[in-house]
Image (tube, rainbow, N blue to C red):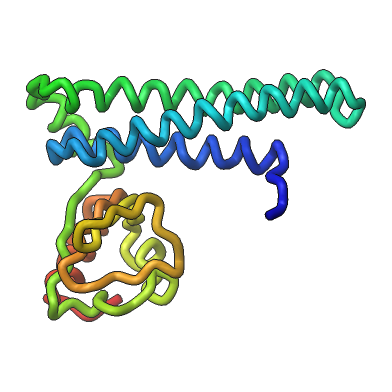
Amino acid sequence: MKKKSSEDIVLEIKDKSELMVDLAYSSLLYNNKIIAKEVYDLENLIDSLFQKIQKDSLEGVKNGKLSVNSALTLMRLAQAGEEIADAAQEIVDVELRDVELHPILKLSVRESDEILSKIQVNSKSILCGKTLGKLKLGSETGMMIIAMKHKNKWLYGPNKNTRIDQDDILFVKGPEDGEKHLIELAQGLSNDV
């Protein structure tokens, strides 16, 4: 297996920390401890990636393969992602400690430019049996699937090869009008992808 470059690690930290924030708010909105625990697991992963980038950067400087400024830039970028991951973990602490979420917070999350939604796929849905790459839901509805539950299995950050099946539960984010369109597709009320 090919060794990941420092740039790849920084990008992974960025992508995973963004996902964590979305998952953290989803766990609060839907009182979902499973998603909250996943945020904790992802935070542990980011901690280890952050330590790796620090070590690799210092070794790169020592070996003359990386300038001090480049090493500092990589470490600062990784640190920013790690701080976002820490903040996401603090958000899910509310859910994991069974603290009642103030209704204003739920309302403010719902009224943001991007909303988070949980949608179940009906057996009559045109989405059933198709991959995300084929459906192109992001460009067609504006909604991005951040996580999904298939039977008892969770998938975080699905990709173009991920298939949607009957009864899958999709956790999505995007504009409110896109949510309406995706709900209609998932319920089999529309075939207009």
